[in-house]
Amino acid sequence: MDPMTFICISQLVHGLAYGMLLFLIAAGLSMIFGMMDILNLAHAYIFMLAAYIGYTLAGLTNFWIALLLAPIAVAVIGMLIERYMLRKIHRFGHIPELVLTIGIGLILVEFVKWGWGTQSLMLQAPEVLSGLISIGPFRYPIYRVFIIGFTIAVMIFMLLLFYKTRFGTIVRAATADSDMVNALGINVLIIYTLFFGFGTWLAGLAGVVVAPFLSVFPGLADQVGFGAFVVVVLGGLGSMSGAFLAAILIGLLNSFGIQFFPTIAPLLTFGLMAIVLTIKPTGLLGERQ
Image 1 (tube, rainbow, N blue to C red):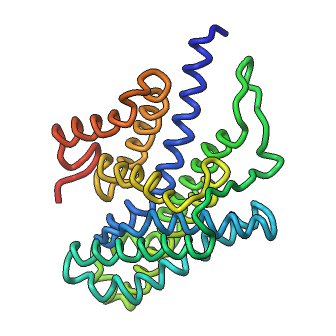
Image 2 (tube, rainbow, N blue to C red):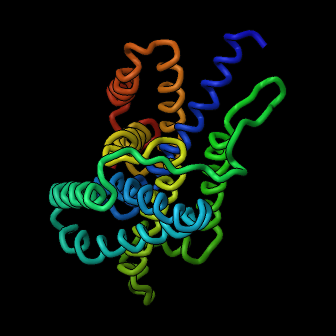
């Protein structure tokens, strides 16, 4: 294999891994806005908190226990935020939601600084996911391949949950006509709380998965969370398929940009967003409300 082909394949897989990670974070944010019409800017900070909780749990037990328990912990926090904070101000529009969720995010940043300090922490990947995998003449880190496969598995789980279960049927019905669902004797507010918790659970999964991939530090929410927010806007607010497409595009653009255009790589994502939103203000697959 010639060096240029090797570099291109390597950057392709790296871009896919990063894009899948962005989608895993952005999926919950996009779903929450699509169903509940809530712009939750604390989402990235909940993702960061999950990374810290996962780091601690992995040190006490192992990576797999951390991957199981840390997302549940932040899902409970998310449900409490929805029930006792966001629900009370939702009727006043997006501005109060944005102010509140930014405030929650700042509190979470100070909390992790107090609890874990400001130094960068690295969670070790489990032994089975360490090292390199050989695909023909190509060798690549196993953990990045795991990120791709794990995100695909989560996507399949989401599709089964929302299209093959009673809960998914109720969620889709509540999105279309919440008053009718209420009239059928189903408490839509509880469904909203559970759905919000599911969205933060997805952020929790991403937080634990990212910990061995990137270092865990208080600025993680800004570093990765901003990219996830761009994914949601670029894909179209509330569009899951649009978020997935945007995440893959940004992941590949980031990977190849750093390799071939390092001086302007940080600007490429903004350039893509400017072009897409100029041509289609609702995003790639978004629909005008």
